[in-house]
Length: 438
Ligand SMILES: [Fe+2]
Image (cartoon, rainbow, N blue to C red; front, side):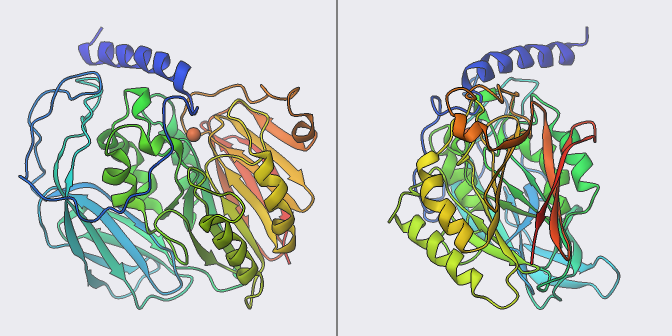
């Protein structure tokens, strides 16, 4: 048996043990603490890793010649602009060259880098997992503006022309478009890459991530490993994430990774919750690890923003997405008190689709005019999708489809409806449904 294969077997066995107790649950992970990414002092530029089994893997961190360490990806989808981001381990040009996907002149855009002293340390399984090392990193952001609405662009990094991607600007109200959703991505232990491949082949304009982006608790996945596995998705389209409980598994992780790299992904909210729109559909990324209670800052923002969106010209409907499900009869719990409060507002303000992850499987519910999809099938080991059927009969009665399957979602927004599909890791459609739109 090849040595590397043996290591993967060992890693997988350890991962199974870890996930058997962890899954997507709350026990091993605290709620994320609010933190701004700016300000950590800068020290030396290289570092030496420390011990194995979650505390380092040995060897000395080697920064690539290009200085580009992770990414790129794009966020902050808008009608005439987008941002392209990557993480670097050395200062560089911080610029990109981009052009319309359908042909046209290329342009360059200059960005800026901000140094940050990353402190998170994780070794994983030596030989199977690239460690996450502490040290100075340069978060790089390029704002690309002057773009044409409803147009897709491709780009490459001037620091490393082997790295690049694609983003699309927001569609004008009424124009058709496609987007995707995926949650609970754990590529080290499950067929996340296959799930992603089938969906990005359909060229969605953008994707929403439903939280639990990466799992230290599976032991096999470091952020360094995650970025390699997920680069095809990150390069495919704008990445619009929300926060899951696994974004804060280790000391410093939340500020070093989610908050530094992915926060400030939209408009009108803060670093943890935000909105954006495309084609007359308004999207609200909610932080279910934060306070969503009635009267909370986030709760008041959501209520006011849903009402405001419903009054805008060209409004067709809203999509709310968050990590923890308001309704579920799987093994990840549900939030019935929040549903009781927010669902009447969803009805009043045209929310037609609520997406969440956290439960490792697939569920679809309809309550009134609101469709709830639980899509936590991006790679966390599949759980019991029907564990709470007897405990929560009111929720069970509203469930119209479910599957214990790895999968991601694709949504086609057309003239009269949102057509939703759940696609598994073999490319098979495991559910489809239609949501009427005005
Ligand atoms: Fe979770």
